[in-house]
Image 1 (cartoon, rainbow, N blue to C red):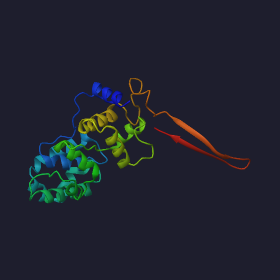
Image 2: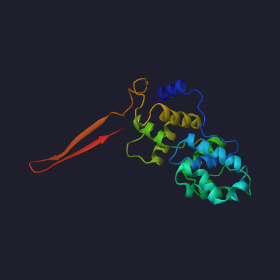
Image 3: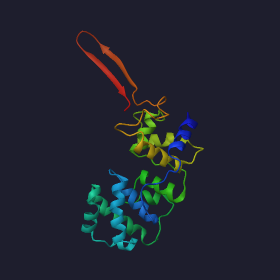
Image 4: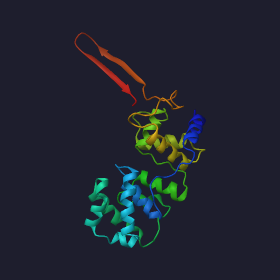
Length: 223
């Protein structure tokens, strides 16, 4: 099954790339932080304005917070994200670059494991796999993770299962597959060559207890 998944992803997404636009290492870090609960397309529109107006770490760290709020407003949670931009820039400006250091990156405001994995993978080609909502959905539909697995559990299982593969490439392929093919709503199942192993429409019901006075049903559904 592993080779079937890889071969299919290679056939439909032969040249996977990060869809967040950036020219400097810290721009990827900030863009990824901003991408929480929004789309890459919208982030790119905002960062085009943000990095044009504030072209350096020093500029970003000294930016007026109200102006940053106005710029990132379309992304939601804009007060927090604007503050994170200033804090991240202030933390980086003295060293002048994004280090290959998970502990340091995860100490930054607004930067969690997923954002750190994106940065380590794309900037340093580290063998890590960031799991977002698209990848989590695909992994569970394909039976590579259990429906109730946490994001970290999904990450660990995918990393172990595909340990001999290029995880950076696979991350982008799974993400793009989930974003454009195996969508949450109206996925393109008809033309998918993985539909025979997909558990999207698998439904299991178990009669747990029944008597004259009460009935209790448990339903397990993967969507």
